[in-house]
Amino acid sequence: MLRRLEIQNYAIIDKLEITFPSGLAIITGETGAGKSILLGALGLIMGKRADTKVLYDQERKCYVEAVFDISAYTLRDFFVQNELDYFDEATIRREIAPGGKSRAFINDTPVTLDIIQDLSVSLIDIHQQFDTLDIQHPSFQIKMIDALAENRQHFDHYSGIYKSYKINIKKLEDLNTKNRNAYQEIEYLNFQMDEFVQTELKEGEQEGLETLLHKLTSSEDIKTKSTLLRHALEEDENALINQLQSLIYQFSSIKSLDKNYQDLYDRLISVKEELSDISKEAERISDTVEYDEEQIQLLNGRLNIINRLQKKHGVTTMDELIKVELNIRAKLNTFSDLSGEILSLEKELGSQEKKLRDIAQIISNNRKRIIPDFEKKVHELLEGLSMQHAYIKVQTSISAELTPTGMDIINIHFSPNKGSNFLPLKDTVSGGEMSRLALCMKSLVAGATTLPTLVFDEIDSGVSGDVAQKMGVILHHLSKKHQVISITHSPQIAAKAESHYWVYKTEDATRTMTSMKILSVEERVTEIAKMLSGNPPSDVARANARELIGL
Image (cartoon, rainbow, N blue to C red; front, side, top):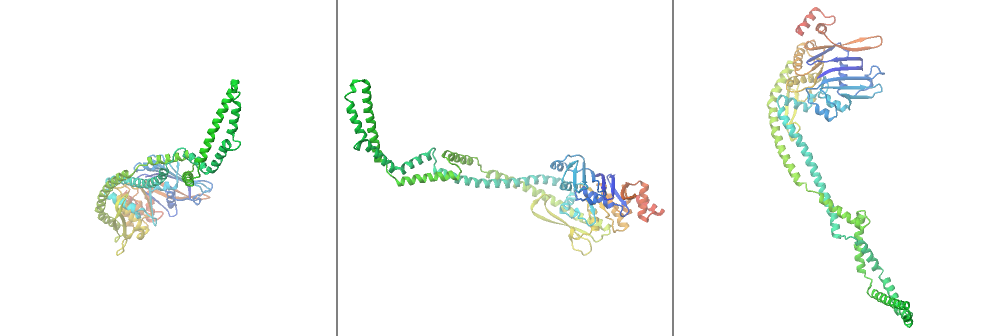
């Protein structure tokens, strides 16, 4: 409930601080005194946009601050989710600087207007003629029906399972996506792995293939060079081995003369034998080395496969390519089949859906049970407010999918006059009708649900004194369960107040200012008497005022 409202430098309000008790608070005052300015200030608290036009003194900032008692509301989660300090009293403040910059705070923490709007929906509900009211919204309509149907326990059970159900649906979607992506990744990795398996890479293979290929492509040159070597050693006219044999023969005659000569002789023999071996090896090479086109093509093909894999995987060596193969094999080993987890989650979702549909059916049955009585009571209240031919009809249908509120789709339709068609509230209700309809509906659910502070702006407009009297009774009844603030011109409604505030204007040499004060009992009598007969009030008006108040 609204505890305190403080306003500075807003429109024609210089400074105003007012406290509000529980129950029914009535605000009266002369036309133009500034009652609507209070609603504008509350609008800022609810997150409406602001501009510097609201600054009376353009040199000073404007601020509006409201303190709410939220101990009866379940708002702790909201504060936690938005990283705000939670206290049983919540302070909302708006500031507008002369330059036009606007700032918003909740419990002294800067916040966006979106956050203030989300919070204020639970704190204050302003009803003005021609405003879009919450009773037009299907979400609020279903809350009213549930409150009357005493569905709280069933709905809490349903909501707990539904929250887990939605989490599991998202988890299942993620698992299916992950599984599909995994299959695609596995398929791609298997394709890559197949290439490596078919290629059968061997460590050091590339270097050996390149050496062999180079040898085969150089076979003619090798054969030529080997033949030249053999000829130079043995077959040419001046072959080295022949010359060496001659030297050995010449040296044999002196080898016995000295050990060193013998050593030289032996070494010459050894060199001749080595050269003979070289000649034989050269002859073997010349005889065995042949140009093999088919083998060359096979080697080129194998090297092309290896080079293509290296290019594909961005490596340049055989060792790096083998590491790529090992990495692919390791990745394949990390993938697990999620089918079992998916199947288990699908079974859990099936079980949750059955529970939800069972609970939703109970909730739906309870709703349908109270709807006829709700429709009847709303008509009876409207009838007392001079809307004798006004009826509502709660239309229900079944949703194919489970929703946060069950399986029902609920829309309240309205027929304001005899013979009128039933149409959605937003298409049929005028401003005055909307206020009276909202008052009737909310008075019926007042004891069954937690409503925010209700602010009614001139809902008595255009009604007779007798109707206003009945509206005052409804407001008074509603205020027994919820804080109600009503701006009114009706003495019959004003007389029902538990606290009566008077808005008035004062003037000095330079400006007009709006002020507000709470009235004493005698001041209330005078104010209501003025509303009955004019200013100054007559003695009869005073007596009537006392009678209305119940003094």
